[in-house]
Length: 471
Ligand code: ADP
Image (cartoon, rainbow, N blue to C red):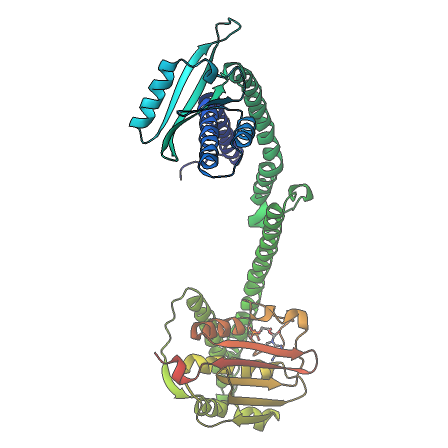
């Protein structure tokens, strides 16, 4: 993978780019656009003045002298009006209109006539104090028809050269640019300290994550994202430790579960070989039963690994869940006769579902064997299957030892056993419910448990009814 640039330099680069853009924009505005913008505002003042005076000329009853005076003062312009009977001038006495030659006036009038009645002319005059500087001015000429008579309106304003101003601005801009760039360097260093340093420190700390260790240093949680990262990694370390412990437990449990039947098989086999009269059908049955237990355990382990690897494909079909449960319950009759268990089946008719019957039977049998294994002295178990608003709900309720609230979420985990001691010889290695979880997840079913310590547990799952789940 291409090596990525560090966050520190990335932030620095963007900030520098931003600064160059801002400084560049200020430079362009001040150095190149100041004069044109100033001129265009002056032209606007001229045309506004001319517009207002033209309206005053056309409107009867308006005091023309007042309008001219207020317009020329307000917009820093001077105004001259010619017609056959008037030649009126108002405004700053230094204004170019006072000195304008008749040749110039005629030229402007002619240009305006040829150009839809208005003309804008720029001219430069020498500074009256004899300095070399040129003071430019703009004259706006407008031809009007007032009471069938031609009136020439001229408005003029001076344009001060901005050379001195731009010189001052340039010097200021050098200072501002230097200030911005130095500030940016400091800002980059500051951001590096507050953003990148904690991230680098957290990354360094993740080295110990594979061993399930992560020391979250408070000083690295200076901002929310770093704090969340710290917390997420801390949680990951706890999860890794738990998974590691669960694996160790599995090995211990599985070895124990494998050893017990193997010891029995070997012991009984040797006894039958060595002791005359021990070669009985009863002893042989013990060997067969233990071998079956071994097969079950190995099958469970294979099943779980296949389910987790996604190698199991469901063989779905439409079937009646009540019929399946009734069929499965036959297996447990022996518990009623030999161990005084009391099974109460409440099954509604017509519980059609679209699912894998073998896998659903596996789930049901797991709930049943757990209910039997953990039912302590109370040997009553209630099995229910009914239609609810969410789907077909199956539950197995026992009145045995129950599960503590804080352990409820963990029992679906791989290899988890509330009590690490083996409860009954037939109990598994803590993988039964993880197989159930995988199967029900594959079916898209919802499932859960309600339990109270020493009062018993209800394990349930809900399958969608056949009409909604059939493909
Ligand atoms: P196991 O093979 O150990 O029974 P499971 O995955 O089936 O493994 O169950 C996980 C753990 O959940 C069990 O070890 C037990 O502590 C708890 N558990 C499951 N069912 C019940 C139940 N009906 N009553 C009390 N505890 C239960």
